[in-house]
Image (cartoon, rainbow, N blue to C red; front, top):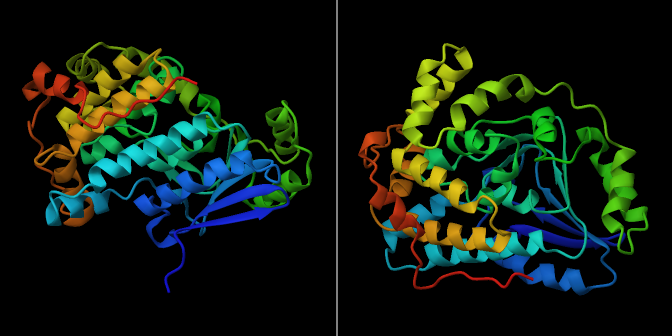
Length: 357
């Protein structure tokens, strides 16, 4: 009998969820999402559960993101299947429930956290990171876009940082994630078990539960070191505040810095269409509610799941055949038309809508 993909335990008043696919860096299957969707409202109402703690099994990753290879295989083997619809719908429902959760949602992130894994942590009350932490929203590398609420939290970062992270898939370690506001506190990996025990022993009741969590975390928090982003932000703002993708590329080309040239080289490898819809996503989602953002992203996801989209070519090249040679359509930024971009934002037949409460 195979081991469960996600483990649930109530311990010392904490509802502990453990993503349990360490061999694949705790990538999120549809089954994991459905189990979370089932358990979350139960624990939210249960007076014996004072907070939720989310962890990843193994010593490498919290979660490397969604199981996109499974979506690829369905398109290849069962084009009429519903996983490509149901996975995103259910994942976004879970993201929204985390955002609105009535109890502290504490992610203990002791390793890689990317893509869909960020959607399980960034919208909760507390993201605690260690020296093994590595953040990225790498969706543009596979022809997708930074979903799971990326349009919400990335647009609320300083200056053009969100646009930079969304387009380039740039990776952040703990100090930079703390500076950016993506993470809330740094706790050494060796202290994570002690932190969880202290949270279990603490009184987290009442309307100030999140403040009480803060006080417990502060007893274990340490200095993550100096961030690198402050020195890079003037150039990030200068290059990535441009209105169009073409202008961003032109700004990078004009710069003589090694940093700018590395980012330019990275962009030239990515799907032009993916970058274009990502930039449009950020423009449309800025200042929108979380729920409106998830509706927009669901529409985008369903267009990306259509046969022939760059998403399937990106997954094939990077994760299935691993030839690292995706054939993007169109192959250049100049080939992306406004109509191609607009198509990703039209309402879909099975639209995802939330109330605003």
